[in-house]
Structures are given as structure tokens and as C-alpha cells.
Amino acid sequence: MCGRILVPTDGSGYSRRALITAIQIARQFDSEIELLHVVNSMDIVYGSSTILGGSYTYANPEQISGQVLDATMVGLDAANIVITTKTITGSPADAIIDELRHNFYLVVMGSKGHSPLGGALIGSVTQRVVGEANCPVLIVKEN
Image (cartoon, rainbow, N blue to C red; front, top):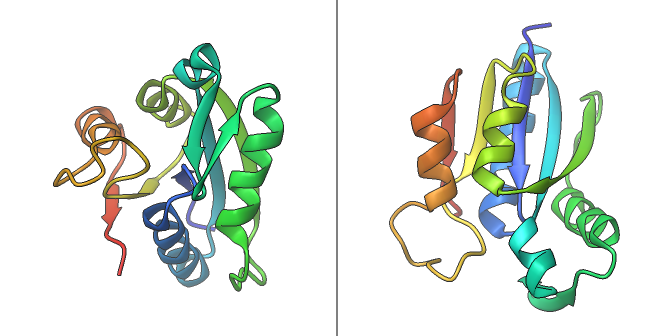
């Protein structure tokens, strides 16, 4: 086995495309994948978020995170690939960077996500991770 791949997801098409790419890499290099959803602590403070095309309240962040993780996986062929899921609450960029300290050899993430600045050239979370990651970062664009 070559190592573990971290794939952060926020439920966006960009995250889904990143997971598809990570599955292809994992299959080629016999790697495991960790699919990570970070529940933004600011969403909990303000009580809602818009993900997966709808508006959700954060009365139960774990439930919403489960929906995001499940939606990211729907219909993907991940046969013979070990994929674990994890939920962390906090600042998305900080949480992803902290998670990378747990022996990942690659992070695969979308170029942007579900932020109000969705039209930006590259998302602010992605920019921070690229700048501070201790391993290579593959940025995937949605087709």
C-alpha cells in the first residue's frame, strides 16, 4: 500500500469530483481514502448552512455531516477501496490542515466549494491548505 489520501468534502460537485479522482489514484496505488467533512463552527453559531442544494439547520451537526458524506459517495464505484469517513467541527481550513498531521501522503480537494464566493478562481479553504499542507495537494476542477 502506498499510503492514505485525504479528501475533504463539503457536498459540492467539486468535492465529489475530487473523490472520484482520489478513487482512481487509490485504485492505481493501492491506497486508502479518508473522506472528511468539517462542520463549520460558524454555521453552528448562526444555526444554518446551505449545502447539497438546500438550507439546513444545525440542531444536529452529525446528522447533516452524515448526509454530506453519503451524498458525496452516492453512485460511485469504490469497490476494493477502503474509504473511511470522519467528521470534525471547526474552521474548515484549520481542521483539514490539522488532519493532515495524521500521516497522509496526498490530499485531493475541489478547487472551490459552497462558499458565498463560489465564483472565485480558487476557494479560500483550498488556498490555505495548499499553502500550509505538509504533503502534496491535488486540486480538482468540476467538469
